[in-house]
Amino acid sequence: MKKLLATSAIAIVALSGAASAQSVLERVLGQIDNATNLASVNGTFANIAENIGNGSAVTVYIDGEENVISQDEYEAGLQDAIDTAVAALPAAELAIIAGGMPDAADYGDLTIAENQTAYNNAVTAYNAAVSAQQTAISGATTTYEGLYTADLIEVSGLQGIDGSINNTLDGINGATQEAIASIDVSAIEWNMPTFDFGDMATTALGAVNTGDITLGVNSAVDEASTSTTNAISAVINQLGGSADTGAIVLNVASNMTGVNGSINNVMEQVNGSIGNLSTTALGAVNTGTIVSGVDAAVAGIVGSTSGGSNGQ
Image 1 (tube, rainbow, N blue to C red):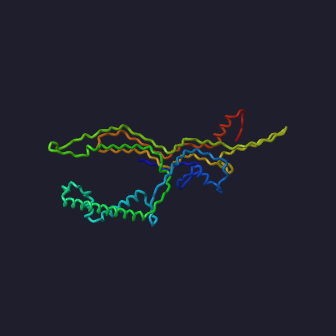
Image 2: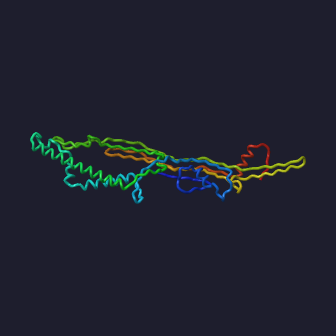
Image 3: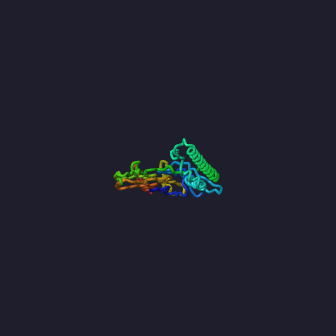
């Protein structure tokens, strides 16, 4: 099983720290807010593929020493406590419980007084043993539960993207589980079913970004003229290329949830074959580009205007 978690690629601004429920853009803007070493931002350009995933509540248990255990660990510990308490019962009571409820047929004709008395005594002993067992279980449960306090915590990303393939085959049924023997039959042969699977392929993608960001320039033209003179002043600044033209540019693929692209096959008591297996699980893929330069922008400006120009 392949799982890829929290993969991201960011241009210009790099983020670190634990994943949160905020989007990538929200976290970027939060980090640059009121930053003294950055110029005023006059442009935000984002090309984002993002998958945060749903959070879910998980029950945990905390003891008096602030140790935290999971639901499975809690249930396993409770079962161990119950097994220990039951095992501590007297051997005679355990034997009675293991024997089960007495069968009246084992005591012959219950119309005979002594057989009826023996049967009644056996039932009384069985009920007493079962009552002692239940008391031991109840006491162990109460004691163990008193050691822990249940609490709910929210875990993000558990309900992720599931592209898995699961096949379970069990050739055992009621007929094959039953052993039959008689004076005429010494062995029974059962033909196991046959299952032949073909090829299996699965692909699970968390977030994919193949977009492009192309930045141009900031330009300003001032012109003053009279009847005999003409003065023109032109300024071109590349976006993000100078102190007073700051810009944030992000090309991001971000995945903050589980991605499961596994293939699981379980075959028991069957004959069969499986073809080729192929699985792909990708948390986040970013193949986008960011282009920033005067050359690209000037080509666009020249191509969209008529007449000639001479610029530097």
